[in-house]
Length: 110
Length: 123
Image (cartoon, rainbow over all chains, first blue to last red; front, side, top):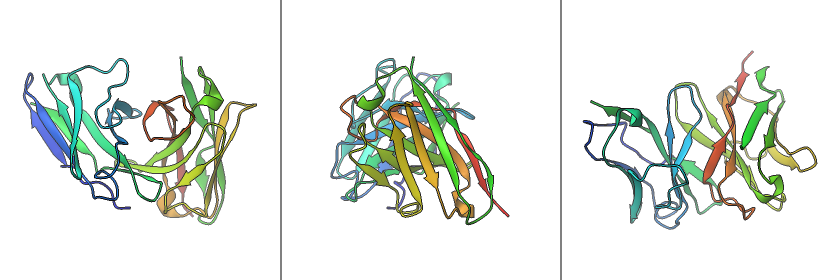
């Protein structure tokens, strides 16, 4: 399975909202609810931010939300804060009983 | 507090073998699926393998199928990744991670991660 497609970088000013897209195919994102989003700061392990397309793990800010339309999933970060500056990865279950990650998006807070 | 601690990384020659271990604590080990994810330094994440809570099922990425074997030992609360026929492209930091759901099934939602173990494949 090829990696899901994400924009290389997204930026925004503090307080703004940004959206990160994650485009797959009908063999992964388009057919399953098992889409997750991870945040990774440099030198750290990834952190789960969203799972099952829209669910937020305990302790994750409600400024983070997820959605899906067709073959594209999205992560929305509202009220952007300096601490949100990190790399973000989506992942999805696939039709071959495997998982695939996205190419990753670097978020910059201006 | 959930803790995952990888060990067993190191330098190995192409064609060689290595076994990673991931010692788990702070949760009911057999109730949770576990997975392995790797990351080439400076690059993105790649899903590698997963195993259900009671080892009913295992899953592998095409890139490692037939060369890597995932297993778990509930008596030791430890996850393993046996890596054989290693290639240069297997060089990466390998993370073990725990599924968020306590059903034992694997859904790819990994809510706790280890710090990673570096595997370098080079002659």
